[in-house]
Length: 375
Image 1 (spheres, rainbow, N blue to C red):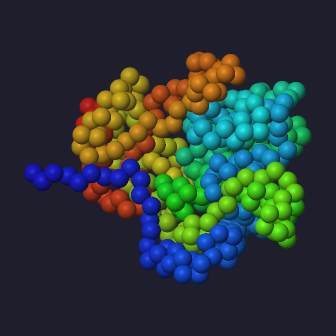
Image 2: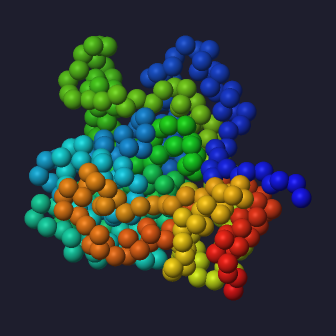
Image 3: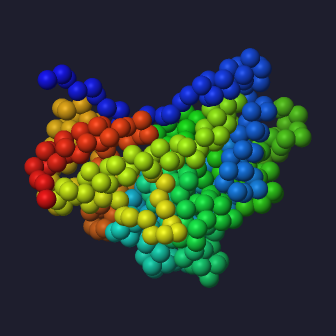
């Protein structure tokens, strides 16, 4: 039998239009803060249905600018989920803000609104819900809590571009400060890059200054009137973004097609927990294909067996409150049992729009064999 080709865990969808626009930028000589960056911001805002969007060098940079825009700083606390990528907490630490964790909902895997509300204390300045794995958070509930308590609200939608919330609105378009990321495994990519949706024109102006070392648009090259950072997105990167936004609906549909194949093929594996089904009008945007292994399964052994078949998989995600630099706040095992249980059993399977039925069948069969069970 012929040896099966290795699969990619993730793969960006790059085509002729991305190449054409990148070449256009290279030939123009305007590689930074040029017209392609402005075009990308405008096109993205139009697609999302918002007034403005500020492109930056990464999703983490967008989160950091969002923290600063909301005025969170030393002595403040912000409530978030421990089941997330570490940038969700690091963006707070950059400004001396203490991350205060609350447990997650066992079905959505997002921050539980009731747990979040219970974690609010005298020093709480805001909430930072995360749309984990592309599953939209309970934003109407978080907005109510924030309004009742006088708190700021920052949406970490870095994994959820294209998701629809419980009120039928695109995630990131509700009027809160929201962030997206465009790393190569995301729904759309610019290679490295991100974007932040500001709440108003004044906030957008400050963000554009802060991403460029604190220089306002109308200032001379070496004039700066505030603390800033090198968070610029290059025009080469923006060119890829313009092409990707132009076919974003197609990219999202391709990922949904693969996700539906997975959900059908994996349904027969006993004890395997699949992503929660959509509850209309809400719908997930497919970032990865996460599964939770049955109780007692040896995740490391399963990942190793899949790897032997040319199928990459990874443990995904950890509970970040147990990372050494965050444990310093007094966090220990057992504090957030739902998040810790999910983190111990979750893994991501190969996922991108280029996978076909045969690829998904191969992954499902190998996973069932590795677990040794069929229902």
